[in-house]
Length: 534
Image (cartoon, rainbow, N blue to C red; front, top):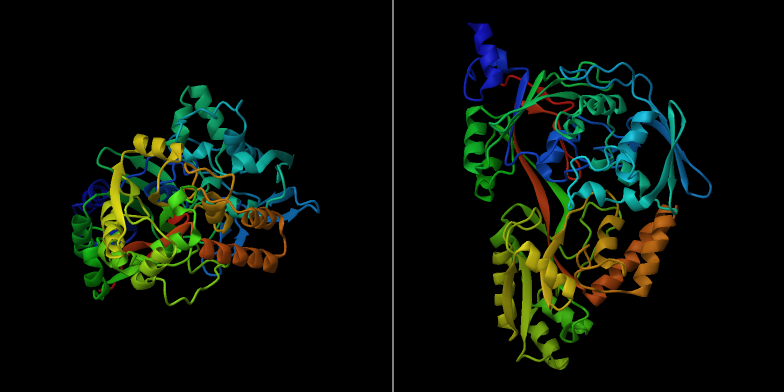
């Protein structure tokens, strides 16, 4: 009977929860959405990153969760050439790929696996280059495409990355979710079987957990990788269960059917924070909500006008009405965790009286109507675009500025942005690497378009020079100075009004220890421990 109950607990999330001995080594994470694939190279949604980046895969470099520094992962060391164009990585020895029902590796990880993983996106002749490819897929648009000119195999344990031009963000990109290492041997097996598409849905990696199954009930099952080369959890079975209802996820957390849940509802946060049996894990992300001013429109070319419109908006009210406790109010593009942030101490960020006076002094035409474009859905950086726009509209009306909200579908919005004929745009940006360039370049570069991020259409020669210099600057202190100068200019020119940096929220039972969450790469159960609190 105990054996039957054990098997049933692996198959069903509703039975056998009272038998603590049988569930002690099983951790159940209840998520709000299911992954779109099991390869973070082709899927950058949060559900996919959570399900893959740390559970299944490893990268050459990773971010230390305590120091926030880049440290070796599959690579045990690296060195850079004097011309800053070549980075040589030495791989660790005896790293095993997963052994599963559908793949049995015959060798350890080597340089061929690294070359395959990156050449899939760089080399159009790779048989995997078009496998599971979608035109909007991040896999074919992230920085490696333009960053690298070649990857060379020096020997079985050494690979060399050759850059198109000096760029100090390479290491940050190699620590990103999309830089995971796949098995070339597995890819060759799938080609022989005639099913290369399985590489992204029946994954093989070197991470702490092995993929077992993904069923029609939105349940993902993993088993412990006993050959994992680093410290390891006491969790034998890891289960991801998807339920879009925040209420049901929280109920299951309280009943013990879930050990942790993603994104509790804003209305639940206060209750959770007072529950002695639950830890509310809150991580500030670099993902930011913005109101962009089209600096190419005559009515918005004057930076003083843009500053006044920004001063008219009460971002604190937006934070309380739209985000509740799921975001942090901000006045800067960089998050407070960024090493390049220049803190500001301005007391007049919201000052409607001064805003109205400035508009009058600058001869703003109050008879015109300001258009506020926004997507018709939601995004990770804004759960309710329309509510945000309504609050901005009310603030503008209070200083005498008329506005019109235009909520557009993806196709119509793209056409409007491409035309360049818009006033303002309620938008944001998702950040993928731990480097200021990942925020500043899409938002501020003269080479960036509204579609790729620069919806303000702002172009400053000085800022462009600083952006480009910072990519080749090896002096860390000088990079910080460059970014400080950029922030000063952006603040004075006001191409954007920063609204909020969103939080990554997870509610975790106190019985679960050592769960790490990296806002850039997802949740990590590598060192998770499940203990009996009774």
